[in-house]
Length: 371
Image 1 (cartoon, helix red, strand yellow):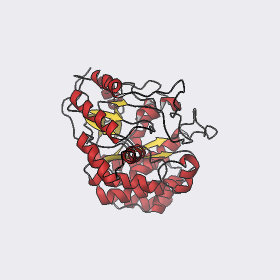
Image 2 (cartoon, one colour; image 1 turned 90 degrees about the vertical axis):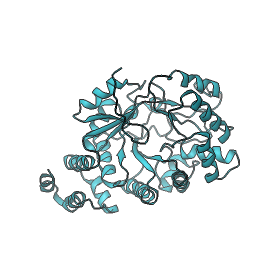
Image 3 (cartoon, one colour; image 1 turned 120 degrees about the horizontal axis):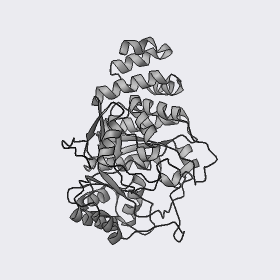
């Protein structure tokens, strides 16, 4: 296979050789891959690396989301989700309401509760800590993955703690890991244009490093396809790669395509599917120390999410059960994202890959049963 790839590599032959030999790609290599229009080459390389890392496996889990509120103190220009208090489509769940959501999943084999939402102006670490503790009484075996770095920064400061102490307290409440949202693009000039009042990139990286040091693994993400350049994308990936070298705390990376519906950046067109696939391939090739690349089907739509598996992705997230509105409010093809376990197995199998149920830390779960 690799001989055929090299034959078709053209001026990227030196990069192909690096990939084949397991050598780390340089910044300029990443940019060169982005500038290539040879999608078949990128797919071949990314699939080669994916198979070297995880064979024919594609992972999924049984999860649902809790989105406590879409009221948010920040005003990111790309956001279609944020509302002000009093808006007709704003919501603001209290703890009993969120616990009622959890009770619906008792006995259904759920392994993960994913909690993200707006940055509420009045809620602090102890509010969310109490929520976590109560969820554990209802779903004691569920892994709780909660709160973006931006949410964590605000709730911890609201409670009067520093980052390290706040993360330690949340872990004591029962938090198991944190998601990768809020990273957007790390370049500060771009960040000022699209989310100028949000926590700076260095703080996002600092919070994830502190989480890893506290024994809280995390995911990482990148919001792409808006006003950034290829160099900005590689800079973003490079900073993640450097932190992973230091902590080994990232479980997975999720490329998040910018969606242009219902936000103040709507005049910017969305990138096409070819560019989405190129991005998946480059991310898989450049992030040599992050084991898993996630094709997040509620954002991409099922067909595009399947296609990404041929461009290096090896995870499709979970069953969701129509419990997230973040991307449906931004114009996602999946307006009510939900998929059963049996449907998920067929969804993956139909691509020629082997479906593997996992827990939140990528431990494989042996028993797959059909619903």
